Length: 144
Image 1 (cartoon, helix red, strand yellow):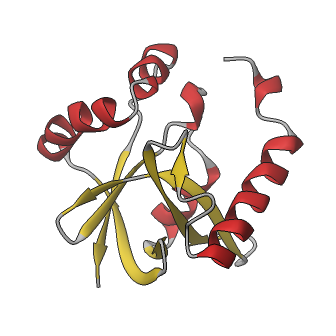
Image 2 (image 1 turned 180 degrees about the vertical axis):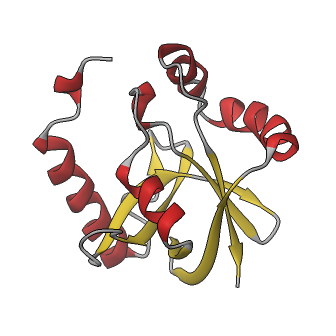
């Protein structure tokens, strides 16, 4: 994966999308390509202690929300994933609904169940997995 893809422009786009999402309760920025639902996941920085928000495609799973720590198939996990492994209490916004949740990495059985559903939702996840040696984590955010 070309590291030039992960440039400062992506931070700007993500911040803009998050701001529009909040301002419109997800009417703008609430889907990716008009198809996949998008949530805002807020984690606490493991080093800085600052709150960090990322717009992510999600899969509703009962009362839980499932996201994928793909980072576009990069060799390392995204920072938000590393943050939630240090502090699993997260904020998840889906549309106008903001919930405090506890994030956890799906176990093997859960991942085997969820991965095909996630690939059906967003086929690029299969490509991303083929581009990296790491197993891309599936993260389940459960209500507290």
